[in-house]
Length: 419
Image (tube, rainbow, N blue to C red; front, top):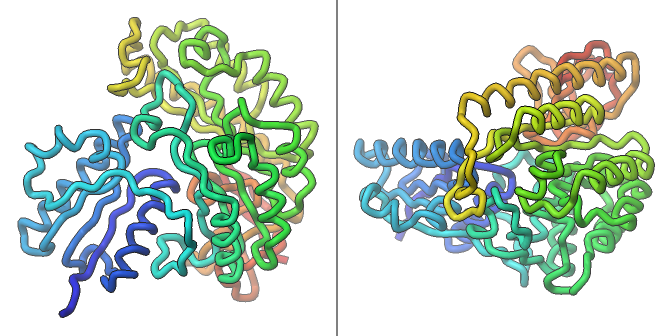
């Protein structure tokens, strides 16, 4: 009997992408063929419900697949991930055309099977080392969706890292809701630094090892020392801070206060020369005053973060902040978002000018239609940060590293010529 072909739509962050790959891995092992959506018999959409925009995107994707089913293009539609995990009972009466709802995907820890299908380019990969989060931030619904921290064993992670290295990945990105908390649940202590040493020493081919999503509360001196001293680890720290005002941080239930944040940032820049710090901030949190917002703006001006993203506060059911008084109007959220993003564009453009004339290592991601190449510096995470547009006299394959002299600088991107 020929099994139906399955296609997948993966929404949300790289963590969801890893879950989507896990879904495909399991289906492939059962003998199903994987196809593009337009050639599939069954469509799986792996959803996100972190904030309002993500929920809307997920619902829109489901409705599009339902339309394909009604038109005879699909036989079945399966909805997986965060949205059904959080809203299955609410969705059932309104999405009767959906054939199955599947909640969160559990990490496989005992084995690291050969992947049958990958949703990332061949030269880089995401390696999820933990799932869930044990923090209790008042604005965040992730612990309710994903549960508390669940670390994978060191042995399972090293097996998967070894497999990715044998596949000659140029870059491995370690991910989780908070990878700095890694090991606390199963080893009863923070074990990320030790894990990084083990992974880095085992690699033979992968040149870049990147850390995504660290909580400031768990950034130890030991961890900073490993990032600084290990040449394979990118000098790139993704450190969501959310705000800087003391009262707002307390209302967010962020135990790392203003003074501690300032000391940590200073320590990071001293311990890791040339480090690029990416942070994310929330504007329009309930009760955020104009004065408190201006303090956040001044903080961004002072710190001049190499990479920065902003979220407009999303009021999420099941979080403590949902019931907070003084909810900020959407218009004010939009205005505050625009102010910080315009400021960051200026800062980024100024920082990028400092690269002019320098010879830098660039990882090539793809070739453009005009014959130029699109690549990244080690301080740019895939699918998140800026790019380097590279002109070259000789053909370059995705996954290759080249030296390029930077000739132009823009707000978020650079351009240069391969040497």
